[in-house]
Length: 196
Image (cartoon, rainbow, N blue to C red; front, side):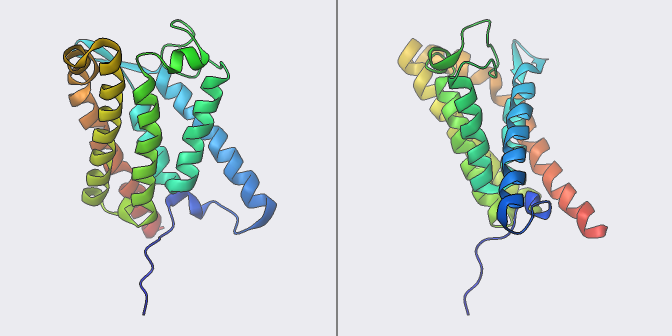
């Protein structure tokens, strides 16, 4: 007897089963997700020597709630909005817009967000979003992959030492806090839903 390897992510509770209504709801959720990503990119918290945006927290929560397909689609829509010149990223329009901004110092991190959504969404599709330890593990792997992609791109632009010093080290503590917060929130929502 085959064991199902895919479970339904949190958002599936709100999706119609089929047809145009399902597609329209998914489109609405993807657009709402890009609005959340934009808001989180513009929201900064001072933690040590750098401003830390809430964007990685938003990516983690969207991926865990939406699952892999809708999570990645939401991130790709967000990237498309940025590529078209909408000021959706953290330092836009102050530091440029569109493709030019995306190929700048944050380009690897932006691409890393898509990988992050794929990893966490994959885990959510398998029911890991119901268990804080499993979800934390998946989110930590996703965080490391995203940071590695950001580091690699930045290292091409400014060298590995400066990339490590300015593009990774200042964000480690803040991002670990965001991973722990996201890994706690989603299973807590599942627990609340089971009780009701």
